[in-house]
Length: 125
Length: 157
Image (tube, rainbow over all chains, first blue to last red; front, side, top):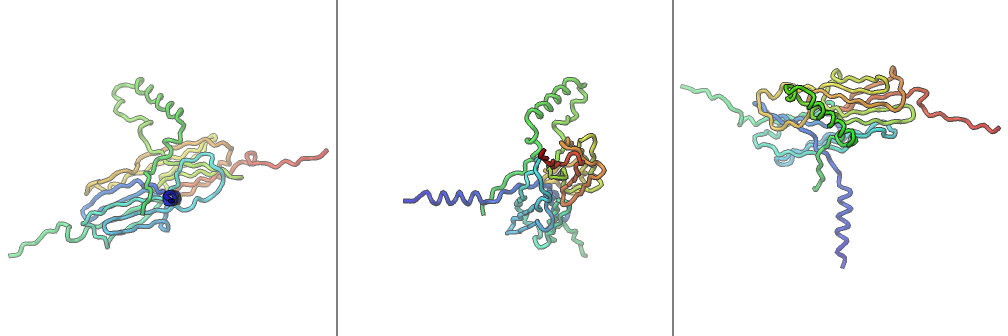
C-alpha cells in the first residue's frame, strides 16, 4: 500500500503555489458608478491583469523585476505580486468597466447600469 | 485554483528592532505624562503616520535606495541627504472625490510621511539622482572615491 505518495505530491504542489499580497483598497460610490482604487507599487500596465468571471472581479498586479543589483543593507519591501478578488454588485454594467494605472495606483471604474439610475419621469397630459 | 492570499503587511513595522520600538513607546509614554491634558487628544508619533517601505542596496559604486510610494505626484516628494542621513518625505493628499457618495472601504494611507536612513558610506551629494516610476522612488547615490573598494598591489621585496 502506498498511501503516502499523494500526500507528498500535494506538498510539492503547495511549494510551487504563488504567494500574493492583497493590495490596500479604497472603494466609494458616486451617483453613476462605483470607483475602486488600489495601491500596487511597482506594477505598471503591462503587469496588470483584470479578470471578470461571473460577478467576481479579480485584480492581479505583477511587479516589474527590480532594477539594479547589489547586496541589501536594509530590506523592508516584501516584493510579492498583488491579487485580490471582489464580488460585484449586480447593478454594475460589466461591459463598461474600465481601469487605468498610474504610478502604481490602480483605479477601476464600475459604472452602474442605465436601468438602475434614478430618472425623472415626465408626466404627460 | 487554490492560491494563498496573504495580507500585505507593512514591513517597516516589524523590521524595526523590538528595542527601538520599545524606546519609541517609552518616549511616547513619557511624553504623555509630561504634557498638559489638553494635548492628550492629539495623536502622537507612535500611533500615526504612514511609513512607506524602504530598501537600501549597495553595489560596487553606488548606494541605491528604493521607496514604495504608490499614487503620488513627483512634486509631492522631497529627497535630501544631510550629514550622511538620507531623508525622504512628502505628502499624499486625499482628493475630494467621494463627497457625492458613500465610502465602502478606506484602507489606503493618506497624509504626510517621513523616512530617514543613515548611510553607511559617504556619497557624492551633488551626483545623487532620484527617479519616480510605477509608484517606486529610486534614489541612486554614487559613493565617494574613498568609499569604493580598492585593490592594493602586493610587492615582493
